[in-house]
Length: 171
Image (cartoon, rainbow, N blue to C red; front, top):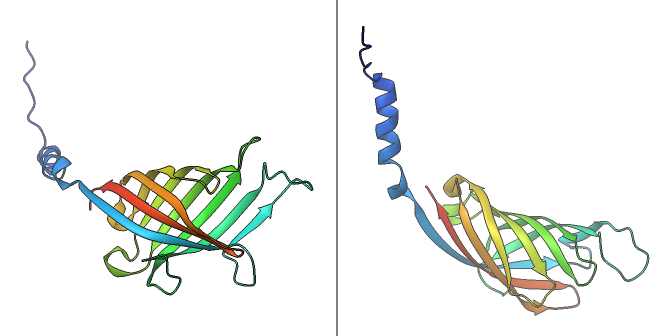
């Protein structure tokens, strides 16, 4: 006796229709432009070396942890829009490059409470540097994209880095 095809359950059909209606059409692309303000010296340092194995001039293996301001412009008094929190590990024997893992935590405007997670290589202060966006939260759930950065100001106490971020997400 031949078997009769079964009817799909209503919940499975609903799930399929939901996936189609919220699929590719819901994907958005967002472009963000901001500045990362890092202080490496003084009582208000936002970046510190937490591990260093060398007593000489090599930085290979050093680990830096940071919690830097994200601002609308290169001006240190411009509007604070979030924090760049993460770490950098000096990972090259021959130059000043580092492996970075950064959470961009937005605290202002419509992005308040959302994050982007970046991962990639920084090649000293010469730039431009290109990092991958590997995820996000809030408005940036399922985020993918890239972030280009370049140092725009170097002083005795820190750096100002310009970020140009292109992200695809679903909210």
